[in-house]
Image 1 (cartoon, rainbow, N blue to C red):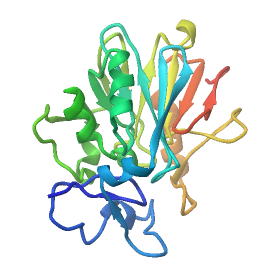
Image 2: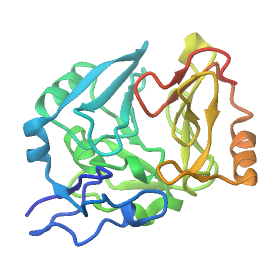
Image 3: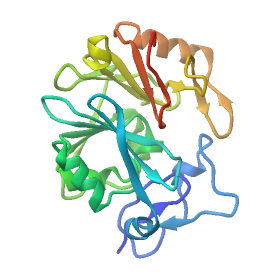
Image 4: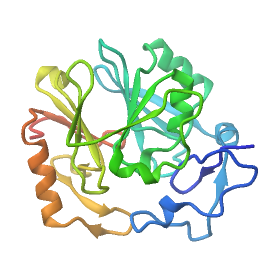
Length: 255
């Protein structure tokens, strides 16, 4: 039995003897199936020819991303906080070197993920570090591998969820109905930071952000959905924005 991983989006599925016949996440209009057809791998095969790049994106904010690029190519962020470390977003590859690096920084208390495209191997990570997973309940249908021996997935509801050390998950919607960002009040030397993935996308210029329903298929997000995102984050002070890819960060005047 294997937990097969979709090569296109990086999502890990529940145990099976054969690869799934389809990937619902890739078949959705916000993603796409590879032109050559659906393809699958496993964690063991992925680790044979990939490794994780691990380096600081900011003080107490460790980036973790896979090289060569795999799936959608995002990097996760390990936010190191006095009350326990939070893994923001997730990636497919978890190997011995990554486990050692994360444990050297205090492990992971919980995992919070912005939207289903980055659910990846979240259950694998949660079981390894005995970490709680927080997902917005509006995106429950997109979980392809249910929680196993580790803590159950906590599907939260409403507009915000307070964690520890004043960290707050904020449901903005947009890209997905459950689209979530993380407010880190002590980030940016106490001026506050948002970890946004591509719910709020930091573009190449890095002075601006953008919003889309689908990035690969260039489906724009409607004006009312964008207004909702802006109104939802308005109460939270922040100087910096950390997007979903390496150096995709607004480091000053983020708000």
